[in-house]
Amino acid sequence: SAASDVYKRQIYYPVEILPLSLQIIAKGLPLVHVFEEMRNILLNGTVNYIEVFISILISIAYFIFGVIIFYVAYSGARIRGTLINMGE
Image (cartoon, rainbow, N blue to C red; front, side, top):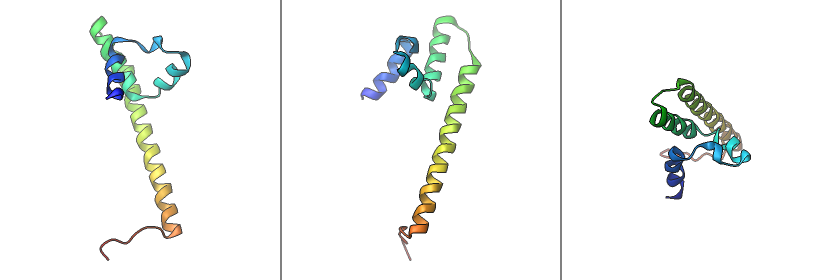
């Protein structure tokens, strides 16, 4: 698919070639940091653990954000009474 092609190309092309607005968006994606580090390992043979740590932090932040959104939506559905009782 086109999305997976973008991620595959990231290994070969650094984020710096993107326009500034897209670089800002890209830095918010955990896979960008992982692929940048993979590229760094392939080209320089060194590991920058900060990039890996940033990727993990972004993933945790997205998870927490998703749980909060779910909780807000679930609470709203309970208040409105729009939840379906299945099996009862």
